[in-house]
Length: 69
Image (cartoon, rainbow, N blue to C red; front, top):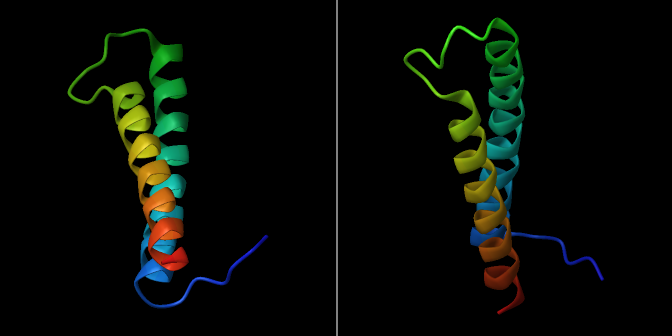
């Protein structure tokens, strides 16, 4: 069942969605970095991708819980 998110829950859900988009961009950078195989350089994009996606999932779950109560 879908509940429209308004207020704080809606804002958290929107931020979670933006973080998912940033995670997808980071994953593409990680793939490009893997193709070069020149080491990780200054930024490990694979680690950035994992962190962003875990953060997005957490924020989305919190948004759903906040919206429910």
